[in-house]
Image (cartoon, rainbow, N blue to C red; front, side, top):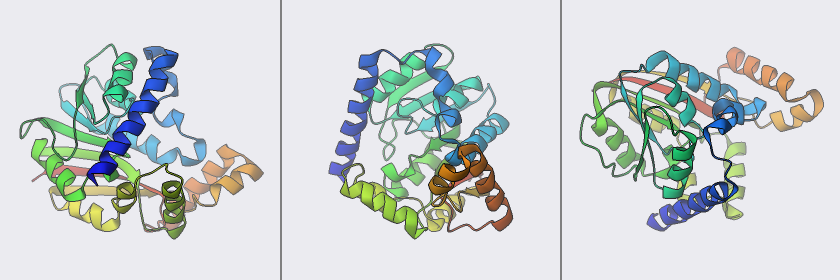
Length: 255
């Protein structure tokens, strides 16, 4: 597993180095960050994640983002005016992020989410966008609770690992060398969501992408925007959890 961590760090360092070489990492590039950087057929959970950020985070709070990478989802946090610490295990990724957000109150910190370099009870809010599978669940969840202040908030968007179609797709990516085995084994499940909830007074979970395995085909027939509308409508009508592609979790009141 430790070797997987080194492989992932190297992978993201190399990607970030390519971005740094192009010079296209300035603040002006923020128009293609966040939910707008995601294809319409997969955008809904990220739009909702950003809505939760705007709803719950205020400018007087201290916020930690886990697995920030090159800042794809940091922009929404920066817009709140809060004091944001963007953390990641990849130094090069954080260098890209720093150049993108050279204004405001976004700071960076190289950090392993299994052993966060912060004191207990430091942050009002911890956020994560797609990073939960990059660390041991027990260690990561304990670290989130440790660095949160009593009554603090955890907001995340991530993939769910119950639908066999999505599991097969991730396995194929692993076989092609695009994923490490540990990220597959640690992909969030309903049990992981329940385990996180035990550390908080209240949790709200919303599921997305019940028919995401069909959307690439539908998009070729009726277009991405219409497909996104169909997918969102099915999510609202069916409310099937284990077949979902993504989920957004808001855990309130750290115990």
